[in-house]
Image (tube, rainbow, N blue to C red):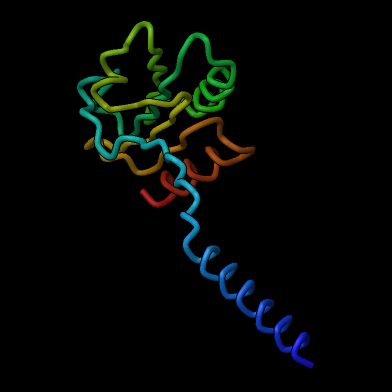
Length: 138
């Protein structure tokens, strides 16, 4: 009987120690989320008076950037200026707006307020849904 009590006591101590160790384990590291700008100076971009600006921050070495530019270009019109901001040509704008990941697509209104953004390659239909939602409510 003493051995059973001793075995149960040891098991309880092991469970208690395991519980304490598990609770003290550090949280997994947080993942950095790439940020998109909240505001653009429209005079930094083509046709600052257009109602909408779609700026695609890209890099010549980025394969997914070409697809992002093509998706955005399909929406160019008299009211929508679409501008590719390639890093080698316009690194100053990447630095000014703290764009650290490409492609980054921002949709800004006439005042330069970024109304929608996509960091990374857009999922199927993601840009179209965001763009349609913004332009239909304007």
